[in-house]
Image (tube, rainbow, N blue to C red):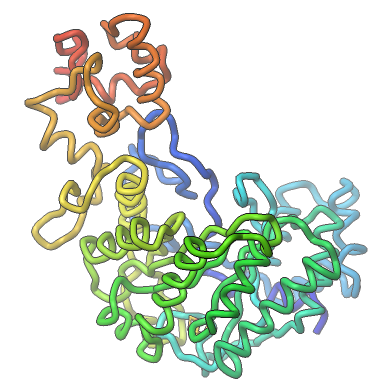
Length: 446
Ligand code: SF4
């Protein structure tokens, strides 16, 4: 099996890992939509989609189709370079071909790059209930040696097809042995092949602390998926994973390493960011549980972010008949997590219903404001940064702009806010401008 066929086989099953964020910073308008790789619109109705908005779509191509698309060339560069030079198919078709190999546009390390998102092996000795790669599931597996993966990625990088690498793996021979192979791949790329671009390296359950340190020296980002918000819920998704010992502990180590060791031996002179991911809707958990763990990760473990992946059943797994999760739930959880990370909100500020769930049909920031600011609007000309950040339509950049503008004079009208890049109509029901409610606010409640 050649390298392209292997990548196609793996890409075909990569339905659970969210893409890297499509945007790295909160939007200035304060719509709390930062970095959500989602096409959902707040105005659209939250109908369930077959796969969550963050999910990487399976390509659906068989190996035979891949062979037809790419030929049987052994050298990836020879096959792909003509396509990048306009001698091959038009762009949409090229994008489809890239997706079939696991290449997606992503914002990685602050830059927009085509990212190869793949596995060293799609074989696995574990049996997580939700996972397409679980042991015993009947599909064709593919395995790379570290040198082979490093070589095929380098060819793609030289052909400008992929400029960053997200590398994970199924587990064969235990977490330590599998982690060694991931580390070997990254080491070859960095030291033998001088790859200086973006690498996101997955941490295997059961890895050793020294391996984590090595991963942090080589990668731009490291991550291990908690999968569930607590040990009890994890039992329903992956009964042979250990929540505290295997999954949470490496995230604690990463934080401790960042706090206590100088990043001298790191490839880029700084420690990588750390993230995790939770499956949403596969274990009967509620949003309060999810956000409790999210807040712990953001504040105590200093994770850069927590990813959410709406559960989607995979055929030939124990959860194949479990209902898919509504992708709007994933979206609202992202909004809530950014409120906690960037806007100073706490768990008790979230508009949970009695069952511990967030409303699907409303932005949690708007829900909080309706409950708390409708009767006591914020005076834009005097409010603190913290209070301004709580107003819908005002984000961190908008707050900076208001604080700057207040030094020049009073903000009197909605158009003054609009001139600062603020979503003034969204903010209007919850603010006072120079002691008065803005003229348009009443119509917005209608
Ligand atoms: S250990 Fe990872 S690859 Fe293996 S079954 Fe579990 S989630 Fe899937």
